[in-house]
Length: 410
Image 1: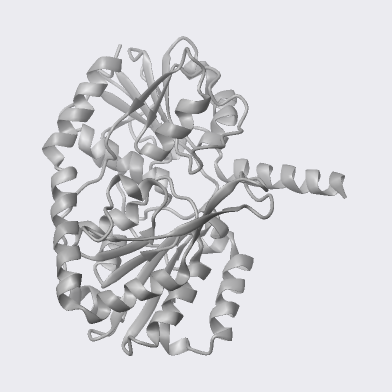
Image 2: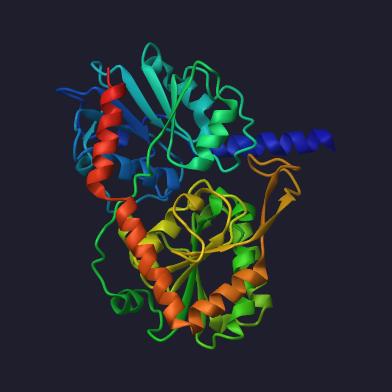
């Protein structure tokens, strides 16, 4: 039995590495690196994953002050891509520039060893900075992730605490503000709802999650249960679930759909699995009245921040990276939790680790209050918009990032 479990774990690991191919995407390179380039930025530039969005936004913000870098797109085997993205608009795309002594690596933490093996000729003898994301501040068990790395860069307090506990003394640790871009919406709420076929008068509660990032961790079942409980007191409530990378995890998505069907409230749900561009996701979030995330662990929570910046109410677990920008009953509503053990090994997570189990009834009560108390809703949403626009001011971010890059560019 133990042998079978070991084989299954190895197969899952192999599947992940097959997805993140980690080789240079030669088809996306449209011009050779030329001129000055003091920095090579590597990443999954044209895919629909959290780390891809972070990479693109970082580059966009950085380019306002610093343009002397080369972008190196990495391959993934998935076909889920940002279809309307022209990589050349982000910057100079090519192979690692011979003048650059610094690599900035937006690579998944559990893929770094494989990435290095495939690209070591471009990394040896250079100053290598890994941009790591990780959701568990007390557990980090990937061997070799600090080998050949000179510095780790993170964008959230959760990631900082996780890396600080385990990094070798000779590896520097740096933290920057998350590269969040405040973009003006091109459509009104009414127009956005019409685009997605959502009713103008519904009280829309929404959750967007990448199922490849673990359905257990993202916890859509908790969202569904809280919604069903709250909908008894919100007659016009509707839950919109947007699932990214549906085609990679069809079995888990089918189980989720069967659970929803078992509730016999089909009219209350809208499940979306189509792929959207970055702007498409923003337009979808613009449709909601409340964004609900009852995650068990979270490295940051970009969709929560997107919703707040639009003046939406966010209800979320009082645990994880979202605490970097959420304040209870000021700019959002934080839900209490109990720490519970992970029940089984899955993906990179291990049985016995601790994570959050959010209070479903408390979340439901928060939804009801936001739906029925308009003055309370307005206080929360006004402060959400104000805080995000102050904290993620573009000029401030450009200055912060450019100052950091000047210190590392050799």
